[in-house]
Amino acid sequence: MAESITYSINVSVAGGPRVSDSRSVSLEAYDKVNLMVPASTPPSGAGLEANIQPGGQGLAKLLVITASAYEDMSYRINDATTQEIQLDGPQFFSGEGGVGLLYEPPLSDASPAPPTTLFFYNGGSEDVTVEVLVARDAVVPPSP
Image 1 (cartoon, rainbow, N blue to C red):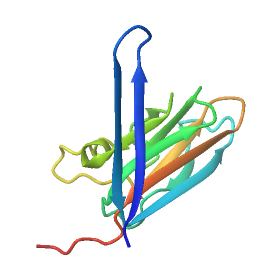
Image 2: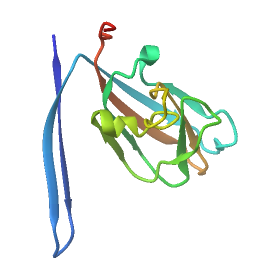
Image 3: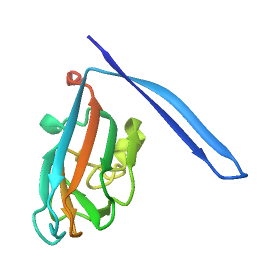
Image 4: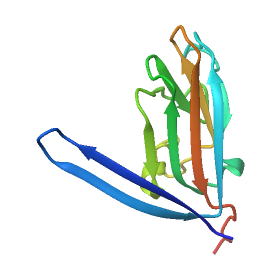
């Protein structure tokens, strides 16, 4: 049975333009990961590992990452040696194009790997709670 996630985005500039959108995403499964990233988890180490997509099939349709604090936070995708990404605010990736930005190497490569694991780092002096929400299909489509 298909599930549905609805999201809304509303960004406005004081005295200026406003951009908003609201969508509903049909999905077969979702995963929510809550984890505490200990203080002084440096990006030079292994980081705190979070599995976000089983099987590595590239079935994610939506990925949202939030944290209780954003100062000195970062993450890496699929491997603790890939490029470090700053987690300096809530991050929202929607659709094949949005989630595709997280493929390692990037989606334009001939054989990209979908994001399956995130490694979180906290260079601050306080523990930080991170939440990751992934909406995805659960059934791998048959090969043509």
